[in-house]
Image (cartoon, rainbow over all chains, first blue to last red; front, side):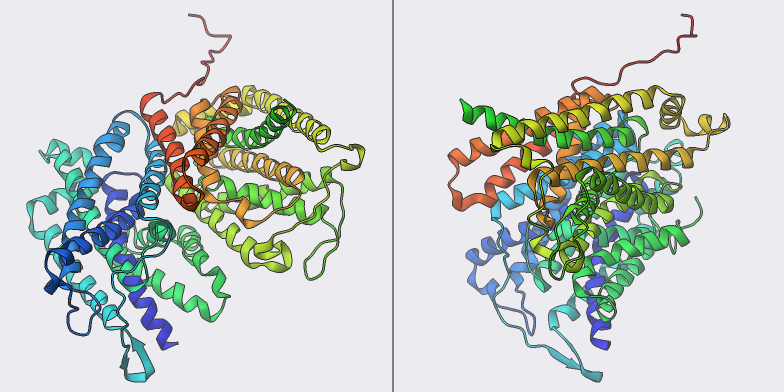
Length: 301
Length: 315
């Protein structure tokens, strides 16, 4: 039971990181972006590519840090991957979404996001093949916590990093001009526009935050589970469940939603056969839409 | 020559079976503006319901009803309709994006049930050895396939004619009114939520019919017949052919299925079998480009919606 709780919290932290970006895009760009989870796949594989590059550049970068399985090379690779994923998100917006935003409805954009998801996923599959990949082949020794709970050092790192990133994002959204502009557009796009907010810049910032968050979540997922081309696809429902559960547009909602999704996925193993685990986020979505459609922290719209 | 002819028959049967599903999606998306991201789930519900009802007796799996194929098809449609009703009631009164997420979820869940509920679906093995309707009357596979092609064509034609009538009926005009301006329609005393639900259920029933036809032709059903990619293919068929045009839906089905099988054949000639996964990816990329490209460059598709003006209007 406690082990399930601990595992759920850790999965939840990764889902939360991915869901923050999805929640922001859903609120600011006003469409359900089914290709968001493919940004996780893209980021994770980018990091894999640059991990090899940095490791080849300087062998000393390859050594694992302390009790963790990852190296300085992976951290550097993640930074690069975050940047490239943000660039991909902006490029996709330029080529596809911004054009449709101007002349078609929100649902046409959802349509297109499915097509984009398909393209990204299969380009990754084409480049890296269908077999699972790992950042590191080192075995990790689980740390024993009180009450018989075992966790990997990597998993503790994931949890800590999520907390740090959420605090940083909070500071960005409340203290920086760009962050305040983002919240203004989320609240009321027309009012923000007439008040002189540069909406195009806000859209760019949204994709940057979403892309970087997705890349980090993708790398963390790859680190604690494995890299597969279907990584993002399998996370579509958990991410949407987290965003909808928390109330779209609410960053803290997405974090709480992510943790709840992770917990219920893992705790579900106690009552239903594990084969049905991937359906848990879907049941959560139906439940929250039925009981409280605006989400836990979402205001009335 | 016989080889080409029999392949053509085989190709057309599948294209028309998918065409029926595209007609169902067209009622939902084309005419009503409802986004269904789980087409494959509703097809699978129809397929499995049909398969269980017409299947022979078997150990450890529910079955042995041995009902006629026609009854199986009808029950499959009812099954898909019920699934649509459950999802629709929860989501149709909410923002339309939530319908996309929920239908996507139901497709995933249906696949999980197909994989795990072995007593009903036969699990990963699926249900095999299903009787082909009226197979006893034909001695050669080709003549049987020609018969099945006529059957599918007749059903697709019937569905086409029925839908053409429906969308031109007062109810069909209400669908378009709701799609264009929900508030205006509501102010005229129409109930958008109820009419949307009706269109959603009817469209999903047609998808269930398509799933049942598929089972009748292939003779077995497994979870791997209803992968998410099939949903993308069916959308691409609709978008390319022309949304809100039933002829476009059928045309798109034949063209996209032709591109899919043709590209699969061409890639298999060039790429060695070791890279099977990669060549599959190439095929999907082609479909994705087709979908996004059509949305960007020719949003109305090959033959788009016809403009209807009331015969009472004076220009």
